[in-house]
Length: 398
Image (cartoon, rainbow, N blue to C red; front, side, top):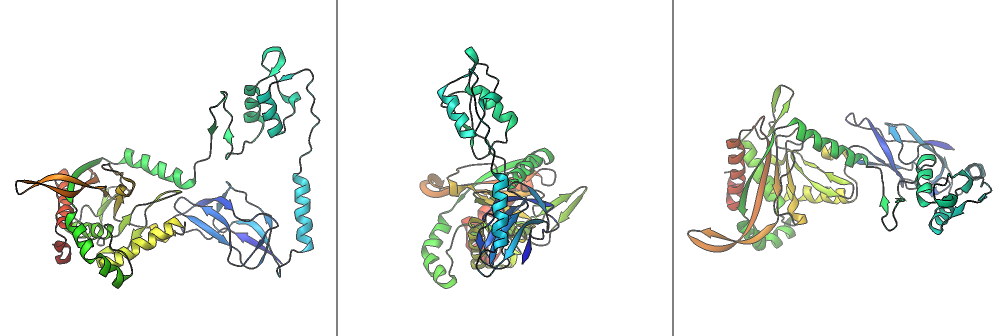
């Protein structure tokens, strides 16, 4: 029985998607609930699952093509574990239709260099179709590059041929996620009055706390005691003190959010994504650490859902995991501010008029000056610094 393969039903915030990968080809056996295709949207990659055991009989939408919600992208032949004769015949006919008819190649006195011969052989080019520009009607490499770029569709995964030896190039289409990130970043720079203020925090108290209770914490809660959990709690407490930092601008209105949904930036192979810890103000340290761990695992596997990344009133980005010492994070619109964490370094500092070595981290807060004044942004960052340097303040909500 033939069954239509449809794209998933997209949420209202997603207009369309792009076929990123067909993991199964026409004629291949698939098992029920096996992933057969991936559709990339502006936010996440959605999986298309096989409804039952059978084979892929027809691919309607190829990789790179745009699809809308619930659109038919292929056909599936339900079987009892064997390929039906009808489907075998269909696939055979498709292969015969796709077999190119090779033209007889003649040179008609045209000279061809070794490099040009290789390109002709690899791309099945008829020399008669080339207008040579070289000396004595010699077909040059540049002639073939021009011919390929004008008459043939070049595989984007193949390196583009360069007009100079030893200087290969590769041109690939930008993914939807990367394209969306690029547009959003440019939009933020153009539409907000973004500034960044800096401070530094002594991380030694938290490092000592992790060393003292880390093992016990992990045994009891089945999750490691990291640094991010402390930053999320510190941010939540600071946002309660400074509600404007937790607000956003909607045209001519300021929207004050009575909850703290904290986005945690996560880097993936496809690009940067920001899953959101909903109602972070009502979660314990262990629950926050568990949420971060779950989101990190899902991001690595490409399993984040759109619901995981919806909303968010404030974002924390940790460039320190890549070795960044100092940076200016870009706002995650429509949020008003974003906190940047960085590498922890042992540095000499003066405490009580004595020079001592401490574990220091630079903090960066980028904010929208349209809504926040400098004083409010600076005191907000100082509040986070004070809580992190005195972890007991986090427990006492000070």
